[in-house]
Length: 115
Image (cartoon, rainbow, N blue to C red; front, side):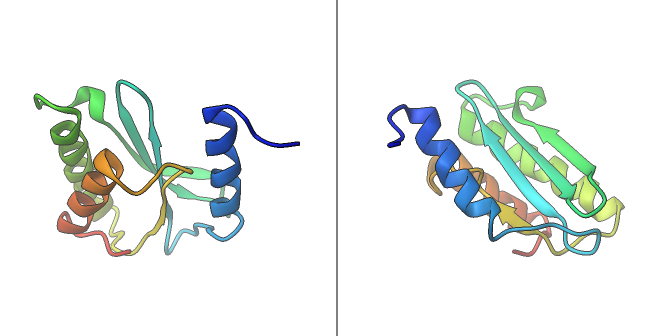
C-alpha cells in the first residue's frame, strides 16, 4: 500500500532510518522530533531503553524557531557533557535535513557532540 499522507511518508522514512541507527550507553542515539510549534530532542540508550537527556525548544528563548532550536541544542550539549557523553548517533526522525533540523544538528556539534 502506498503512503499518501505527509505523516505516513515521514513514518516510512523514519522506519528506514531506524533500521540502520541504534544507540547504546557509550554512543546514544540523538533523536529529533519536529512539530509545527517545537523541536524535541532526546539522547536515548536503545539497549537499556532509557532516555539519558532531553531538550525542548518550547522552553528556550528566541524569536524564531531556528533560534530556539539552536538554544535547545546548546542545552542538550551541556546536559550530555555533564553525563560525559561526546559521541552520538544522529536520528533525524524521518524529517529532511534542512531548516530547523539542520540548525539543531550544527548547534549540537558546536556544543561538543560528535556525529
